[in-house]
Image (cartoon, rainbow, N blue to C red; front, top):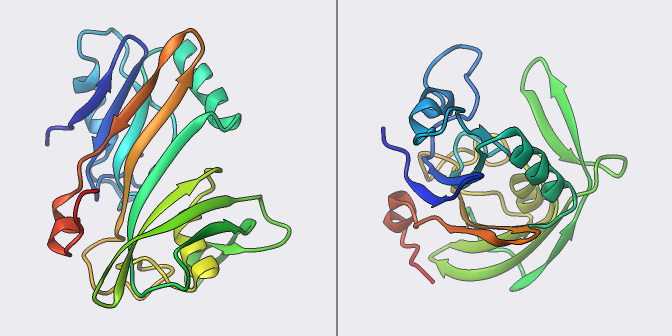
Amino acid sequence: MTIPILFEDGEALVIDKPAGLPIERPRKGGASLEDHLDSLKLGFQRAPVPVHRLDTDTSGCLLLARNPKALKRFNAAFEQRLVEKSYLAVLDGIPQGESGTIELSLSKISSAEKGWRMIAARKGKAAVTHWELVDTIGSRAVIRFRPETGRTHQIRIHALAGLAVPLLGDPIYGNGKGAARTMLHAERLIVQREGKPPIEAVAPLPADFRTLGVSDG
């Protein structure tokens, strides 16, 4: 597998992570992004390090730091909300309205039967997601999400709890049907940097989105 590179300079790489590739090695073993980090050195002595997380099913822009100082600066940028992210999603239905902001705090729960998952909870961690309707394809909606925060499963649970419609193919917050994976794509990433041009990357629309009728723009 060749990992496409969307942006490269002396302190950062942005890759187009394929859907189905976990960032960390699964407990049960198998392929992960860790298998590709040495090949992403690209002449540097150190292997790059992921700055943030994307779910295994999620494709698209993933920022990697090429040295410890850059990693520290990028982590601070995420904490200070200096990073702009946008995602495209196909929903298993059509929500009411055409745009809005979802503010629902999130908390993690677990059970022996279902394992762990996130829920909307007043005493959870604050989470904010802006959304807009991009298109409708039959009984499904294409939504652009712009999260201000980066909580685990934030977009997936905000779609379900905030818009009352889960992502297509989501096995945890939806019925897992209609697609081979949870249909979420990290389409754009912008990281502001002091004294340097911002990191900007756009990930092409994946083939499985096109198969469902999603178009660019």
